[in-house]
Length: 203
Image 1 (spheres, rainbow, N blue to C red):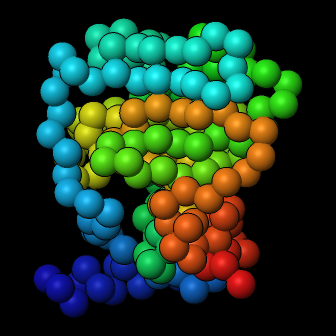
Image 2: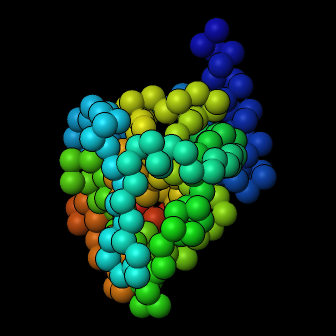
């Protein structure tokens, strides 16, 4: 069985490389490795909220009931981890970033966003990247609620960047005029993280 699975993995990996979907230095995995900073937080729907602050004309606070009732959409996309594994055709369901944008008015100077998560975790992303139609706040993965270790109840998904930008356990956004490093970026990771340019770590 293991031999058969390995053969299938190699076949798929070769196909994805030929299709130009496997970034350099990456290998396909049929599993979903668990990697994160800190511990898995406990979700309390009565205390959970989502906040948008910074350079916005209308700061936002949503309770869990309010956030979970926003319009939902689905995105199928590939996922590439800086630790060199890739997964393909992952189906995410959740709230499109564009839906949140409808509720706020970013100031013209806002060009970057600091993504805020549980336990003080942060990651920086240019606003232009978050505005792509594939960016969403995922509540489900392949038809099932997100597992706790993969970001339940809400995980930001930015599929064209390395997966550390797809922040688990998201709690808010801070709009900024200038870029600033988040947690991993302060610890040697590249500020942008393009998998196809192998922007893994700072020069």
